[in-house]
Length: 210
Image 1 (cartoon, rainbow, N blue to C red):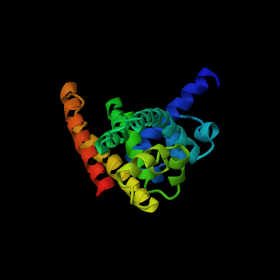
Image 2: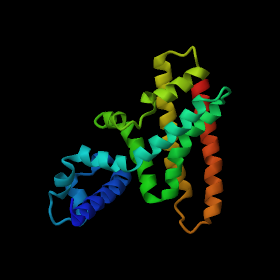
Image 3: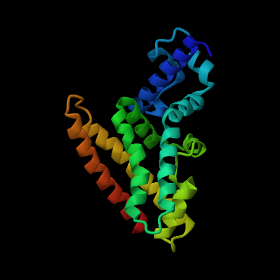
Image 4: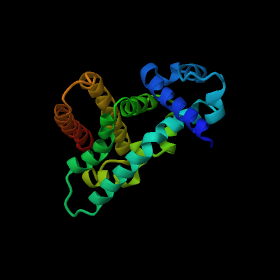
């Protein structure tokens, strides 16, 4: 792809990411993305991404691969431990995603978009396709089973769904309340986020082991 085409594609992704997060996926059209991205060609988004799902997939892929790789690495390390705390598993789930908050608007948008997708029948399968949803993470399922060995597969799936909901909506709410003032002391923000992540890990551990 030519340099100008790469730039146009990146600009459309940037624009779609923020619009999806701010206005809601269902309230944003390819035409409105083209307009916000200053594209004179009203079919630019369709040209580069095919349709709305293709563009949404490109937005998610920008973040999902790195998060999945980091999470799987942490979970693999935990699997090798003879002694394991549920809090360690919780941290492996939350920390790679929480790191997105430090990336500013783009990382925050990714978290908010995922919160929407969990409630979207139309796009829910996209999270499975990209390996984002926790219930299809086999390594995580094996670790969960060590702590709730008598829970049925369905019950573990339910708890994974609850963990995801608390995690995405919790981090999104944190971003709204604590990251609006960009002039805040960076070190202070990091400490506050660390405390919040610790509480979030405790909350999801309670869901898994209740």
